[in-house]
Length: 307
Image 1 (cartoon, helix red, strand yellow):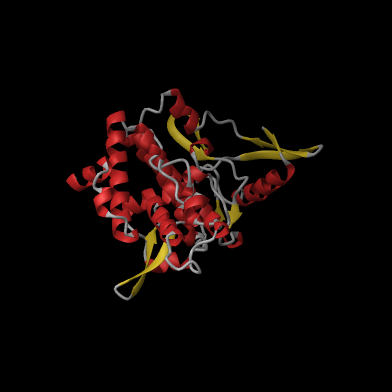
Image 2: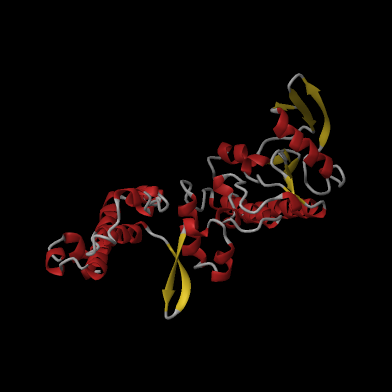
């Protein structure tokens, strides 16, 4: 039984009413037994289940699952998504905490999807809605693209990757770093896709190459170089003002350095820092006009040239 906030659980009651139109057991969804009001709360009684996949993984120190175990879970989660699609419902909060083992002793790796507090009818989801946990957020949510039930498929895929790797496979600190990791993995999204995004400008900048307009992923170095170019503008009338500089992406933290560098050894970290500083020095020479004879004295610039 769960007792929680009134408005959130009213939404869940509506979602569970939709779920009751199909066979919850057949579609690997939690079964609601009953619900009632108590003072300012709504109480919901569910079938008794075992433990969440999050607790299960924690109990085994996040040791990855075998492929045959993952296949069993994956099949059931796809059945759950099919069931939700049949009733035009988007779960919107799939994560390890919301996938429950039914009874690991008697029915190993039989699972059910729970927690419909953030579920919505597909037709009710507005473009630009900030939904899903950051760590499991689909790219269309981050970019501000039209949303539907396909965002749940993304999250199921991410869950399966976690079960296989035993770790989060993307950075956990910001949307920018997640987008950056996706670009490194899959390459740049199509221009047509980025054109539709309400939030594309948070991560990408439009430029012109060979008479064609293209999008490029912002980087902290590029933001810094752009700021320097505007500060070092020869024409005072075109030079950036303090108020404009405060709003520049270099200060608004749109581009955040990946936290994964903390995982590197001290030696690798120093080597990476030298390489990064050297690349920045080269950019300064090429784009801002800094004297190369001065830059060549920097160990980082020498390292970059050697590499």
